[in-house]
Image (cartoon, rainbow, N blue to C red; front, side):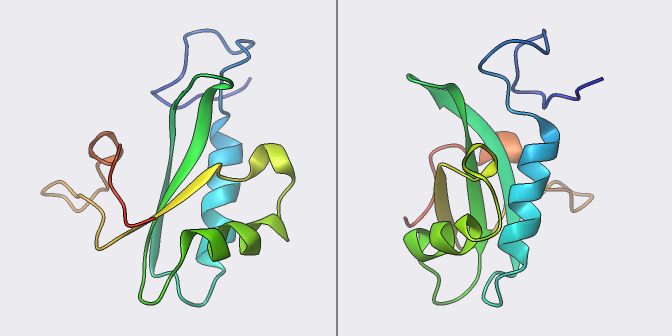
Amino acid sequence: MTLLSSLQPDWPDHPAAVRVEDAELSRSALLAHPGVLEAAVVGEPDDDLGQRIVAYVVGAELDGVDLSGFVAEALSVHKRPREVRVVDDLPRNAMGKVQKKLLGGHGRG
């Protein structure tokens, strides 16, 4: 059974579905970079793909383009984030869990 994130369509065979495994692989690959302190990966709407993987990372002296290249060395094209956004911090709830729904549209590039 394929697990889908909460941002996915209700049916697993939908072409816009970003699998949770792919998003977690992207996150793990980003965390392997020595400058990345934290990372969260979400699915965001895309006109061409239906949905694309977007990563939000926290760390000093980071560049989204460089991080995309770093991840490209470890992951196949369909498992890579289509965009990497560098942020100052990840939004969290009172329990410390990252609130992914608050991430959309933020980042330094």
